[in-house]
Length: 173
Image 1: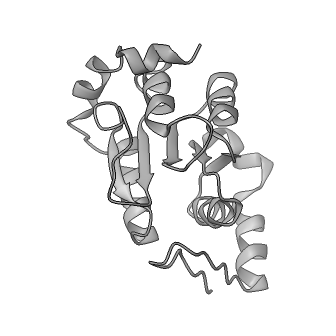
Image 2: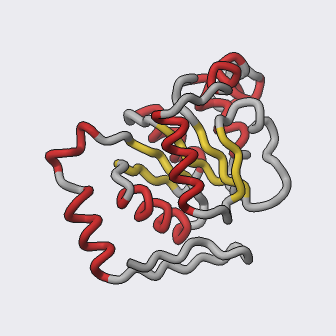
């Protein structure tokens, strides 16, 4: 199976052979296992990286919800059962740090992984996200971090919950 991740120039290429897509669809999309899987919400303003991330997570056994805008992602976050969020720090209508803060304010137990495409950290995000990583890091690192915040012992989670009640969290109604 071939799956190319995002390259360092922030362009994305998805190379998936038919067997990869078909096998992941057969093994991970069956209705009999839907209630046992953790649901991950992915938010990215770029459709191709969002699709690549969805394929990766579905293949890893997660149920995946996607949104191409932060406010649409916030709506899904409040209306659906979400176990974790993978949020890209894009150039959307609302700063992703503000969206992350609002999510932590609403559901402090839900872990958030923020993917940054540049060296600049988003406003207000660092105190509230559980994991801050570069968007171009290996897919294996993303899967490991996601597994850690969902199933592992993530010691900073309690500290993040205390900081969720910030002015940025209350900004989005």
